[in-house]
Image (tube, rainbow, N blue to C red; front, side, top):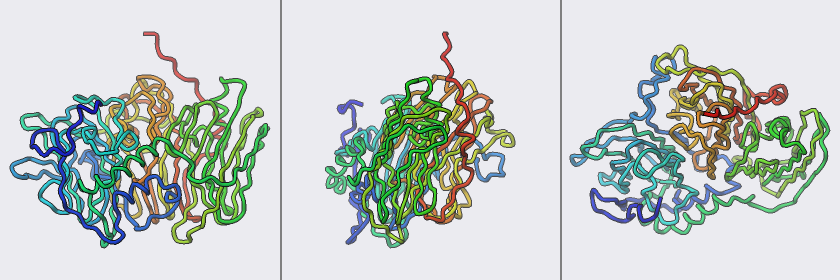
Length: 550
């Protein structure tokens, strides 16, 4: 969007394009602030620590309110653009309340989309009856925060400034005593679906938080610009000892790099896989498995194609944690700490020798006995999952288990790589995430592509620091597709359990083959359930579907 078309950030004229600010804030000696959250967003070491101060991560969304319980007829209801908490009348205005939290917290992600952007967002902080921030349309691209760019604010591939489409904002919005977010339709305009997700942290009472304000944003402008730019240019974090191994890996053999003894961490792993036959590349990358073990426990076992964030076919990936050129060169910047020892391997499950190089950047890192966590990554493949096309027929609809974890940890992201056997869009299903003692999902989504920071059934590859769509073969979504998402400030801590289910709903009945990879951190006792292994990794990939001539 051209700069000249953005609203004027500091204007206060009602009914015009403006963003205004309240002055409510509470500052303590060491509060959670906009700057501390920005630092955390790009901190390499912080990602592998259990959070302090502790918090719960939740999501408000516009999901269909007919979904009240798993045994209800409306559990798969799909009118997801009208869900709100309530309606308030404020100074004669009809404001739809989308978010209303009391106590210290921080909004960490806002995802929105619609077909008609006319209207007004209002953010009320710390119980004030005056909005502290106003956005003059259902469009986050209208905010002109100093220093904010494509690192933390992304338009969806379907976005148009005056019509259909949406965007995602990752700029943190902290508040000391509470926050309410509302939207008012433009008077005289018929309401249209307004889809939204608002991810947020809920801190314990007594946590000192500095509230988002005009003054805070002005003060943090340079930090915002630095973090936004850094997100677009990821680096490993620290330069340590470089370990490198190169060999031709025979069938059933492995390339192995033992790690230095003591308290250390892997800051980066680079892979280079070479083949003389490009037609074998996709199958080869599926049959090469990356595994990692630390302090006597294997925590990683994922085909290299999927560990890279690309999935079936091992396409290009360009994100904060993972980079791949789609030609056999992969860089992983997931921090992998350990206390005593570790080993990294590339296992060759194929029937031919493979020329491979693995390079590891490892450096000393003190283990925090209360907060340090191990890096985990696991993979699951299942074929022939049924897709239903009528959400009102709940008895015929399916929820597929994406991830089930036990223990203490932080969920950091996932890849969905799939082959869609149906001729049309497969991704109407919502994510439902249950954490610890949830009696209702603390994250209830509005569609598969919405979860992955896009909207309107996109069928085009895209890349952001937080993931993207590495593969989308056909406009119909028939055949191969992949979505990838990683979490920074919106990572989900859990103390006992974590369950992630996704609805299998589409535009036409059919089946899909799903391969999912999850990335997370956990205690040594943490467990993952329902993973796949060698048999599935050796399964032959289906040929890509060719576009029809007409």
